[in-house]
Length: 285
Image (tube, rainbow, N blue to C red; front, side, top):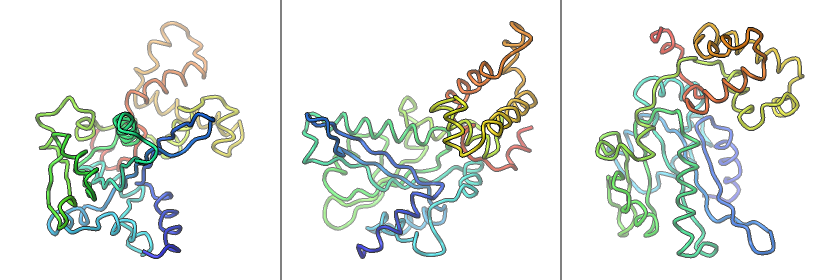
């Protein structure tokens, strides 16, 4: 792939609704940081996933990233994620999960791998998976995949180490205690929040103050307060029990108290912060 094309491809991937990435920094003795490991994944089209499984070939990652230059991008938009999330589930292609052997010695590899695994789980919490596709490209990848019992080698490629690995719900039946299993049995949301509500809550999880939210969302303080008010009205209508215990203790429940309760709820139920199709909302009532 031409070097000049890398920029546009990754810019489009970064703006795609289905792209997730993580970087593991390593602090040196002088206080400077370097990259010890990187991870990236993207939700892909069902037809693409089926074709890869029926006709496995090397270059899965290249086909995903290369599609960003055409009109038929394989990376999911928010709308396509919502439709897949509401039916069978999303297909995930892991583009990379690697560490730099020049910076990470053998004793640190497990910590870096665990950090990447934790970042993957956190970034995808609340999505409903159908399958995960992983292209193994060298011996490092092969050792990693072989050490995890629910990763199945779907196809071998010439060269000895290259392969297409697969994780499906059936692979996890005997490994329900694993972190990945929760993604294949994720419950539906109860609130079916609008995109603007989810945007507010995702920002508030980092910092719930009005000052932070006005800067982060590019809104006035009055607009932020209106968003909270509309969100509270929706919760009162869809899930009134969330505030019931507060009302029993104090008739004049304040906004900051409600924010605390709502943020605690979505931390435990990340599916509320993910896109789901409205058709499911209608059927759930």
